[in-house]
Structure formats: C-alpha cells, structure tokens
Image (cartoon, rainbow, N blue to C red; front, side, top):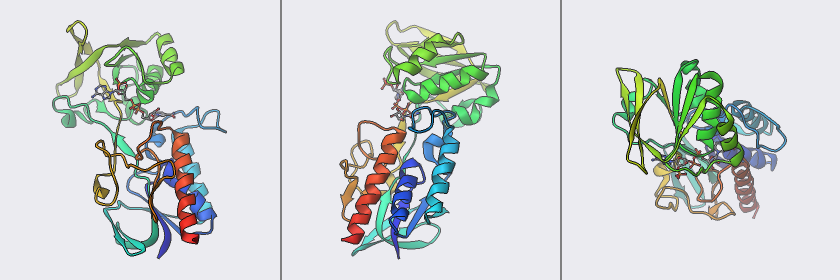
Length: 299
Ligand code: NAP
C-alpha cells in the first residue's frame, strides 16, 4: 500500500511527486508515454522562474531526477482504471497497485482540426509537434494553424529552419502573449494569414498544399507547403476516469484551487478546470495537491 499514487509525469505530477516524497510519504508515479508531458516538446522555455532559457525536455529531465532523488518511484505504464475502495484506491496499470491517496495529473493531448483525412495525413506532412518534426521540413515551406502560445512558438521555431512559415489563424486577435506575436510580426519569413480557416490539405501522397478560406471575404487561397503543424489547443486526458472525477462538458476536472476532489482524491495541472494553464500554474497545482494529500494522510 503506497501513500500516494500519481497519474501523469508532466510538471504537475512530477512536482506533486517531489512534494509528496520530500514529506516522507511513499510515492509511486505512473507515466504512460514520455515524461515531461506537453512541455517536453517545447524547444525553448523562457517563462519558468529561475531559468532564463531552458529546453522543455531538459526541464522535464531535471524534474524527474529531482523527484527520484527524494525517493519517488517512477513507472512507465498506462493507467487503465482507478477504483475507489473504503479508504484506499486500486490502480490498474501493468498490474494492480494500491494507495491511500491518488493524485490525477494526466494532462492534455493536442486537438484535431477535423479536416478531411486528418489521421491519414499524419506522418505525410501533418504533425502536432513542431519541435519533434520541424527538422524534416528544413529549408522548405510550412504552415502552422492556431493563434495561441503554442502556435506562435511553433511558427518562430520553424522560421529558424524553414524557408517560409504561414501562420493561419481564425481571428485577427491572438490569444498568445503579445511578445510572441510581436516577434512573429518582425520575422521576414513568417506571413500571418488571419481571419482564415483551414479547409483541407492536399497530398499526393505527401502534403503539397493547404486550402484556407478568409472568413470575412469568403475568398479561398491555396498555399503551397510541405509541412502542416496543428497547434489549436488541447483535450484533457480524463475520459478513462469519468466515473471517479467530476468533469465539465469539455472533460476538465471540476476542482477548486485546493486541487481537492474529495478526501484522498486530488487533481493537478492542465486537466483541472482553470483560467490559466502555464508551466508555473501546473507546478503550483502539483504543490497544492501533494500538500493536501499529505495533510489528509497525517490527519
Ligand atoms: P490555446 O491557448 O488554447 O490556443 C489554441 C489556439 O487555436 C487559439 O488561438 C484558438 O483560436 C485556435 N483554435 C482552437 N480551435 C480551433 C479550430 N478548430 N480551428 C482553428 N483554430 C482553432 O492552446 P495552446 O497554444 O496549445 O496553449 C495551451 C496552454 O499552454 C495555454 O495556456 C498556453 O499559454 C500554454 N503554453 C505555455 C507555453 C509556455 O509556458 N512556454 C508554451 C505553449 C503553451 P481562438 O483564439 O480564436 O480561440
């Protein structure tokens, strides 16, 4: 019987592991895929206090090492189900594990755009991760879809290695930080294609162009690109736990700033319903969730 089982190895889950283990509790953390969550795919992080600049991958590695240093046990296995028993939880992963408390930190995954044959285009020019796949399009033309921080960061990253980058966004206002938008405007090889939606990507069999429509004029435009990067937001990875967790209509877990669902059950990071999803708010959540779990264990 562990004191704390954490589901998810992004910044929120790893911070919870650091706080839980450092409080002397036995901590077991599960990560289904790669450690570090979404941030490990960011090639450059400039807004995590204490680091003027660090790659998302390096930051994830540091968090993992720190959690292990304090005694957290980390397992790579997908958690399939969690069952609540009286005063404890059974977690089904590669086998069954038991814990007195569970902290959910499963994070989110990239949203799909819904263009025809989207799944078939993956690996044929379409990608959801510019830092993972951008290098395949070195010296060529690419498009990024979206107007949030991810889209702007992706466009800036790609503009360093690609000939031209088209940033296609459905409005003319951007959700992304002003400084990123300003940087993008100053790059000569980034073209902002605003008020425009992506209709399709043409491939034979590899993407050769995309078609976008200007929402104000109805005009359609074919843009020749080899790479298409989707950066239109995230879906919370909570569906497997819907019987245990209160979810809103988008699938985010409804829990307040105390990160507490009920005694013994906690949630942290991007999958929690909240206004601001940032690295710093994810690690803050991890701190709160683990501290609440420790308080409960000691009560
Ligand atoms: P986001 O902030 O939710 O932005 C999604 C963007 O995609 C928005 O511009 C949205 O347009 C657009 N969009 C949504 N659905 C669309 C659709 N079906 N078709 C076309 N466009 C669509 O997502 P994100 O950029 O992935 O960022 C997620 C969170 O992580 C944010 O809180 C962000 O600040 C954070 N983040 C932080 C860092 C960092 O700390 N370094 C890096 C990356 C991301 P509208 O604006 O019109 O809704």
